[in-house]
Length: 124
Image (cartoon, rainbow, N blue to C red; front, side):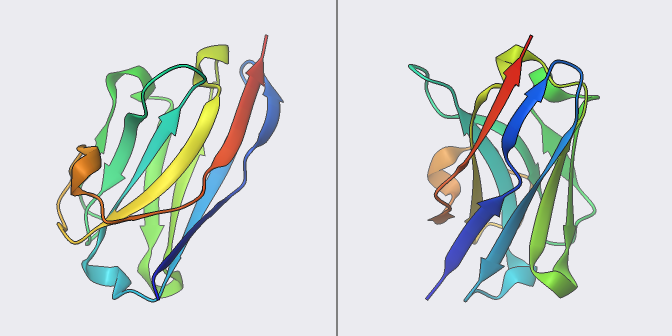
């Protein structure tokens, strides 16, 4: 049975950094694209970053370009989201998702498996 599990969230100050981890099990991980989405209170879930199955191609939302970096270690079935220069507007529940489509995609409907989310809170 496929499982996607996020970890690494927490409460930080503006300008701090956090690294989120996404562990995927029960899937042929190396053929999946993986993405991070986030959802702030009262808002729609939005795309943050994605990485293709090779790890060679990435895609980012405009709001995080230059601050966030997505990476993956296929040998560990794990994807990371390094978040630097955090802002209060980054506050949200962050979700990891995996997709049979192995490319860099940003559409929620393309992702087949989702984690439960991890809270990130950035205070000013």
